[in-house]
Length: 200
Image (cartoon, rainbow, N blue to C red; front, top):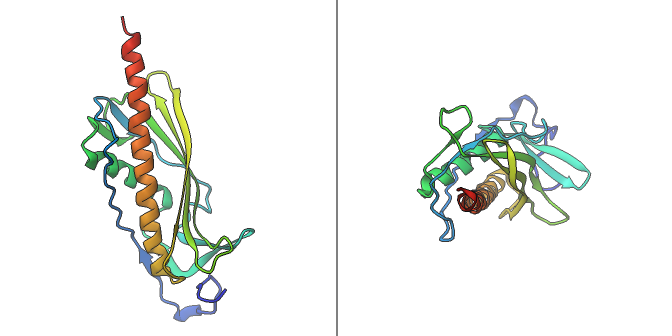
C-alpha cells in the first residue's frame, strides 16, 4: 500500500528502527465528581498480537501487518494503564489510585481488556489510530460488578507516515483515557452513594 511502510518491505539489514514513546496529556472534565474512595487498577490484558511491541496496521479488514522499522517503547497495555492512572492522579478528584501491586486499601477495582490498538485504514486514504477497550468496575470487598462498558476511539492521522500515525495514537489514547477515567469516577460514586443510603 502506497505510503505505508510494512514489515517485509525490503528494508533488510539497512533498515533503521525507531522506538516511539507517546506523550499523553489528559484534561479533567467539569462533570468528573470529587470522590472519597480509593481505586486500584489491575493489569490490563490483551491478545498477544494486540500487545506486541510492533505498531500494528490494518490495510484491509482481514489483514493485520506491522509498520517496518517502528516499535513502541512500552506494550500497549502499559500505555493504557499509565494513561488512565495519570488521568485520575492528575485530576485531584480521588483520594488514592494505584496499580494493584501497590499497597493501598481500595474500595473499587478497575479491570481493562484491550481488544484493538492499531492503525486502521477502514477503506480510507489515511488510517485512524483505533483503540477498543472493555472496562469493568468492581466493588473490591466482594468483587461485585458495578459497571461495564466498551470504549472505542478512532482518531484519523494527518497522513500515512509513522510519525503522523503515532501522533494520532497520542490523541486517541488521551481521549479514551479521559473517557475511562471520567466513567470510573461517575460509576463508582453512584455506587458509593447507594451503599451510603443502605447503611444503617
